[in-house]
Length: 633
Image (tube, rainbow, N blue to C red; front, side, top):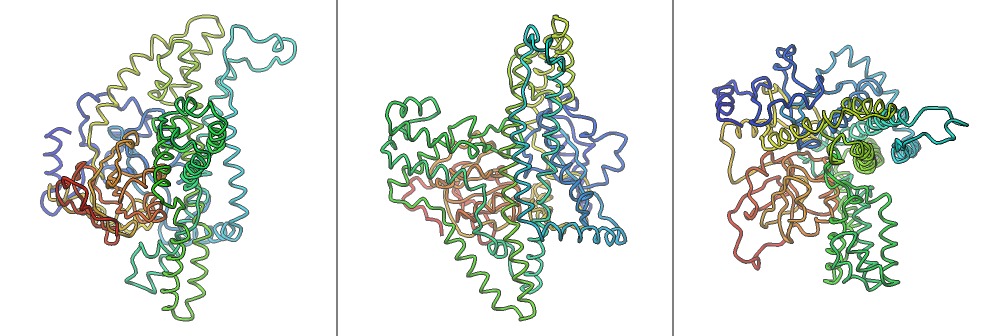
């Protein structure tokens, strides 16, 4: 960002009229000129809507979309917001909330909540919501099983899509028997079908989600009404200890470590770095072959697990790159040899949960106990879905979706449109359809498509733009400071509170603390250690034993490295974000939503993470030896 923009920011919030930057005032980073062409018109701040959009507060959705969006990937991001909006507004008619306006500025995604309906409309929507939500709550288990069938069918549907070979001739059977769509027709139809799957999956994603959060919010509200001093972490621990699918991939790694030691092939696994070396080191013996068979069984579906959020094609999954799971298995083998029990502490977490519940339940008036029990039971019933949908959609489905897009791209590479399969993601989805029409015409006529003369220069330029945008530091919010921040989901998931907004403003003014960061107490415990700042999932291999992980946001697929770290810190997130939930289940101290951890803390600095109070303290440079390093409390 240029000094001119920084001065402009300061001018905007001098005195008592502090604000975040006006989206229309932000300058394009040097080298990113023309970035607007990478995104559809509906993604951008349009000049014609300046008055309206400048009056809104826009929060950057760095919880789900912390990086610059690739042009093609933006269609998936759009779909996620569409799914949330339609389920809130049109399907379940949530009384106080509708959907979100979404914009992209300099490649980053911002959102602004649409105004709440007036009292009359909320009352009308409440009647609709009561009938619809109660049906789901009363039939939750049966509807959830049916949902699993539908989402699995979508995953299988994507995998079954065929990208036509565009062979020299249609087969003879086409003339004598089929006489239907040609391979060129089928190419376009298959692409449309892929987009349909990518569009409709987000309705499935959101179908149960906000109902699950609503059930938890009802329980949270009841607890706050009866115990005004109770903190959010304590309430969240009352619904912990429930097994969810997001932990299953890591469980598979633990099983594979145990199996390697049982078969006597642990050393061979430890000496392997990738799939090829695994095959070489283990394929020559019966015991090694047994272990490789166990690995193959674990892969489907559990290795369809993205290194990141799943929302970007660039975050490959375990199934594509075995480096992380292989290292995770190796870590578990070493822990087994050190005498550790690899069993996840589910029973201990559940016991602590039950003790907390009994402690507070015993303090309730008799006329409240039944309501407390019912609200708690409903929260525990719906909680697995709140996390399980993430594995089904963001990980399993999107792994298959991105790889199917690559299959389409491979066809374009064959025909000289561009040089690398990954290049397709620098086109918008509408532009990919344009390229398909070009390919259809050229293949059908027996000629040469125009794409090879058109797209390479555009892709090369967009790669330069993407790099320039990635080096820009986007503000956490845009527009006026909101008069109030009290929407429960915004607080619970994103961790955006009045205090958060104040910290953002202080950082803009240069008044933020350089040694103490505050956020949400995500998971209890206190730990100290050297910091390891990670900005992208591909940096995970740098984590060393005993470090404190500091990241913009963590992914559930990072759990194999949790055995190496003492605590976790994230820039974004609230008490019910994935990072907080996973940390609680793994008994790892965590503070989430600190805002500027990755820009304040430096790798190697010694930090203390207080997961009980939500405070991270930078203590200075790391000691020269680790002998006096405190253990996790």
